[in-house]
Image 1 (cartoon, helix red, strand yellow):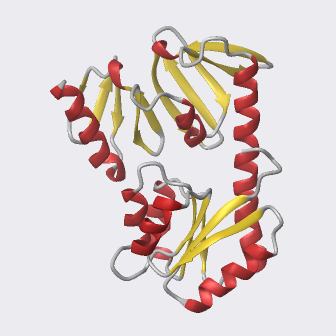
Image 2 (cartoon, rainbow, N blue to C red):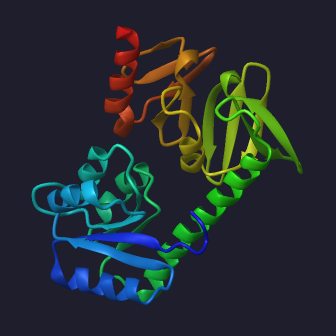
Length: 245
């Protein structure tokens, strides 16, 4: 996302005071643009069909459909900041790769802290994309990663799996392992979705490198990788489809 482009935001909350507070906070940040406001997740589903956005401010405890379940219905969800009065959903929220999780009532200071995380993620993604573009002559075949002050070329076909380590990722191939500063969710967006599969908040695997799998884990070479509870449905769907073909 270019730095001069505003981040289009959608507020989804069934409580009028919370909606108004978020609208005021968004209006006060130059880099944000309010694209719409929805009272519940069902309204949001219909809104997003016609109006793509970059960021959701999403309540969790809503009638008809929980915010966490709503995110799972989206094939390619925007970035999400959960806004809720309940602490109990925090772990589940972060397992869904939320940028942040804010407890109500939402102060301007806490709001800005969350938004800064989004801005920093966008900046990192832009810088990474520019580095790759400058060094990438065969799109889709390889990527370059910064390792020890140099750019290291990794063939996509050589990747076995990738492990996320907070602000770093560890990329495993058949003959080497590299560690580079990267956000796993950002790297996921750079990989071909028909070749790589997110199986856990900390793991992405190359589909054609999977040796075996069951309901709880995937085996690649001698590595047994866990399948996250929130990823099981999609993993089974993808792998069952691959088996059928």
